[in-house]
Length: 108
Image 1 (cartoon, one colour):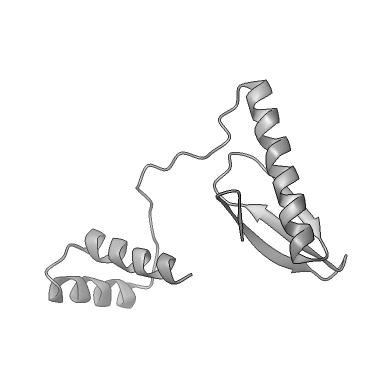
Image 2 (cartoon, helix red, strand yellow; image 1 turned 135 degrees about the horizontal axis):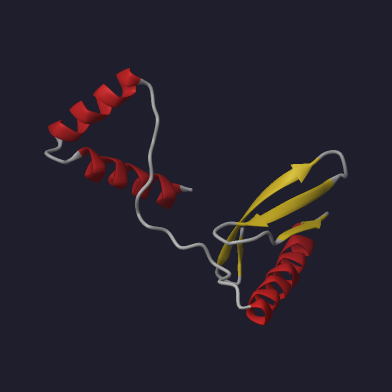
């Protein structure tokens, strides 16, 4: 779900019978609950507004910074297959993985 340009993941909490939204890429938590999509949008907007105000008051950077580097642990056979696929496309493994992530995130 996109709320004012910020992505949030929504799940259903069956114990309380409500949807739960959680913003992605924040340095802290700004989750929100509602029983409808419209309610989620409104509660998300309020939660984000409150979080950003709190960060401003306390001098905290509200958004995570990403370096562009991360470790991935996968099965050795999958690693070998990925290297072969990258070589077949005349790409480094980093380029190939980056392209795969880019395709996957455009689809989602």
